[in-house]
Every structure is written in structure tokens, then in C-alpha cells.
Image 1 (spheres, rainbow, N blue to C red):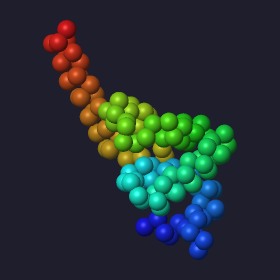
Image 2 (cartoon, helix red, strand yellow; image 1 turned 30 degrees about the vertical axis):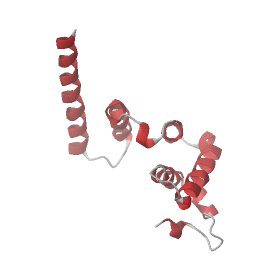
Image 3 (cartoon, rainbow, N blue to C red; image 1 turned 90 degrees about the horizontal axis):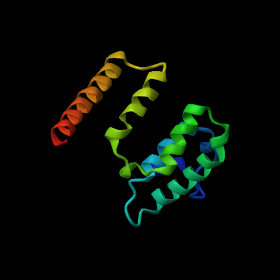
Image 4 (cartoon, rainbow, N blue to C red; image 1 turned 60 degrees about the vertical axis):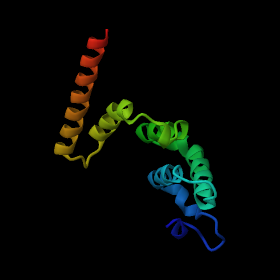
Length: 123
């Protein structure tokens, strides 16, 4: 599926570096590479190079997302810990679904309450 992003020279297309959101998605997708998947290794090198080069010219929200993605690999993240940040990012989006947003907040609050209760019992 990554071949459509490549030119005839088997290099990733240079016009991709203008699409920051696409580069970020490509970078995240490349993190699931298994040993010997050179296309995904090349995708990671290409996307991380261009993301690092453009980070100073991004808006603050996108810059923060890119910095976070480059610092911590996707498979090493604790998704529950990152949930408040995702909810906050989702709040700023214009095309958000109110019901989905409310569900995410309720889910996070319920799980947090359960964990707090467990900590009280342990202490």
C-alpha cells in the first residue's frame, strides 16, 4: 500500500513533505514495521526527517502532536495516560462529534474514579 507514495525511482515522493498531517500518519504507520520491512523503515526515515525539518513552521497544536510522536513510539505509549491530551485536542477540532466527545470524557472520568477508589483501598 505504500508503493503509491513512491516515485518511479522507488523514493518517497518529495511533494509529500507539504502534507504535515499525512507525514505524521505515515510516521505512525511505519512504527508497526517488522524486521525486514524495508519500505516501512524507509517511510519512517523519510517522514521523521521531513517532520523534524518543518516542526518550527507548524502551528502550536500540530507541533506538539509531532514532537510527541517523534519522542515516544506508538507501541510504547500508555493510552489511558494520554487520554486527557487526546480529549483536549479533540475539543479544539471544528469537526468534532459532540456525542463522541462526551463519551470519551465520561469514559475517562469513570475509569479515573475506579482507579482512585482502588488506590484508596490499597492505602
